[in-house]
Length: 499
Image 1: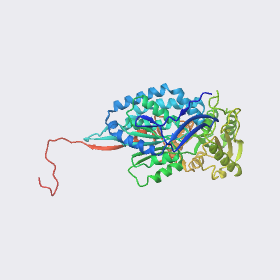
Image 2: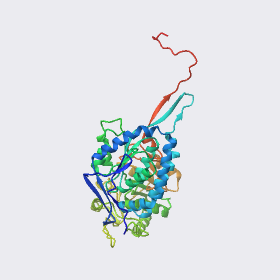
Image 3: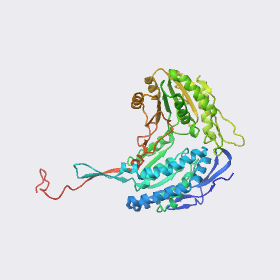
Image 4: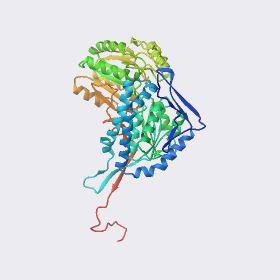
């Protein structure tokens, strides 16, 4: 098979790809779908973090002084280059992440669409606002140099959703991709280079976790936009405790619940929940892992979910008609299987067993979708029901009413997303007002999101700096401007200051 190999392209610093020279090491990326397929090789050098930040600082003054129209023109060119390279980018994502090619293509399409959203509706939230009956305005200023530290599961879409608004507002960016999926970042750099972005405005560094930490606490960085685990997010906050001037925007994990009421449409509900639980092999921060169903619908819903789970086709991401590929790594699979063993040991009933599976001709990290039936008294299984597993695992618990369902849904350290399935708008509105989450869906999959809405969570799922349509507000600060009311009239006077 022809693979989209990036063979040591180098970091992207000050407008060009730079060989690390005496590299500290190399990221040799094998596909989790077949470990004998080498997808890319990226050298890394910790000293390049300093070089990239310094390049961004030098470029900042010139970039922010360009007009909005000129910056938008460059980003339109970037969008054109993304479209031209769509298939190659999708192939690299599919093979490095292990997600099905159809899904990787939708990820690139989301990257392309983000430019329109950022330049259109998104720009309204950071546009200059005049204040009625006051000679004043609210203007938004760029932070300066912004670090964008990306995740492995959406290595193109999620960083792109922060990079584009940051650049539009006049920031310069240093991007550190996940060490598991570096190639999407290289493609972003290549497309921006081809679009004519001035040197130093966007920089890319590859490397392990140490590179990301060095970037996230670098004294030359004015903002850190991070997507990933709650544990790493906590490290970033601690690393920056002495720097309250540095904006930290965190999009972290979830333990997302779907509430299904007796009056829901069974088939639509089952299909939406199954998609949310098993798409991207359960490796979405918005994946549904808990279903809280009222009594009359619980067993029919379990039966239908079991049918869907058993029928899902697991395989290599480039094989036709595959819905679900492998997990990202052997370590991820081992953690998932260990957590599932805890559930079984706690007496949670197995309806559809998970477990590792073999895909003929492929040596990868494949697992089956898993479905379990839990009692409300068995929902406090440390390491299973309280942790984001990041795998295709789902359990259903039956409850008597909506209030009980809301209480169980809120019994989590996370608060990213939730779904409510019911024909009653009143029931949904009541649940939405009570659920402690940043994103709530009515009769829709929790794993979906709209770029025209905010995206972020409460509790351990974030720090109240939403991405999505509000992403620009995480890389700018408001400036209050009081204008001269007019030179006519009496001079101002105050007690104790003679005229």
